[in-house]
Length: 344
Image (tube, helix red, strand yellow):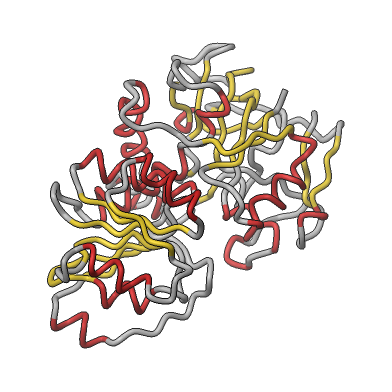
């Protein structure tokens, strides 16, 4: 099969397009999916660079956000047939540990993220357990469908589950032009919140406004945090949606009002944050981590996609063979929303 393989960790030049990669075999309870599109995530860069936490085996196929068609079903699989259009829940869990039994598969003791711990969607075919399949919304193209599972699931888990966002609250979305940021703006507005989004250029700020942001701030301005506070008339932020890490963490803590919540899912500028603990206890602040989300949450999102209340934002589409160029664009940060690989 056609696939992009990683035989050694490193830069985008380590991605190798091959025409005759081994095709995965289907076992009982599994489904083979013909991949039609796979969206890129910053996770792909971390894995490509060899982040130790994932212990990724080589050679490896990247890609966590996948849309395609059922190609073959294994024994005991019921309810799915050849040609069914699907998206994939990006986490494979054991189904037996206490976290799985509580519906928190993202915390499974044997958790596997597709495209990180095991082969992903930069390929013609992928095999996953039946439970990972969900019906693709018919109103979305394969490219659009691949652009929403991981980022919208993560943003929903952060805002709705972890931060318990309420209507009328102020939400600060750091990096609103990213895939997860553009999802967060939409989810926060769907919830009835007031949204301040940051981005790094006038063009990106305007796109954030188009998605529903009530106020936009350029985070490259040294006084960005003062502008955020002024937008709330000095009241401060109820929920900070954060995935930048070290460079902004202290400022984000200080922007929280009493009872405020900060929720984070990433650390693209570094993982060692310094902040004043006194703000945390004197204002009764909450700091939450978020790791993707549960399958049930993805099912909650699907109707909003079907009826157009939420929509994936596709910046650009590349053919599978051009994965290196797609990675270079992702690393350039010169995009808005999601970059997608098409698998024709």
